[in-house]
Image 1: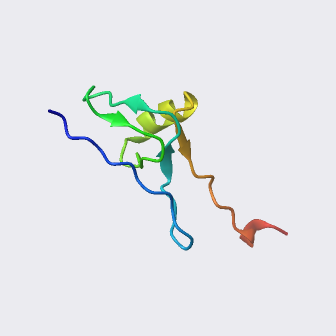
Image 2 (image 1 turned 90 degrees about the vertical axis):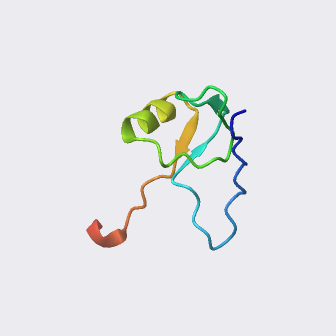
Amino acid sequence: MAKQQTPKAAAKPGETAAPYSVLKPFRDVNDWDLEHKPGDDVSHFDEERLASLVEKGLVQGLPEETTGDNLE
């Protein structure tokens, strides 16, 4: 039987959220028994896979933080 992932709790105030989190449930490409559920952290996926999942609307990445250093 496949190991089930437990859903991650939402980030509490003062904690940083996962850089890439699941928006819509999907099955793992390498292990069909493994389901990634909304809120799960998938930051460990390679960049190409993450880009594909973001494009499909299954995963959300945190927006890049901009600093005021370059603003004049």
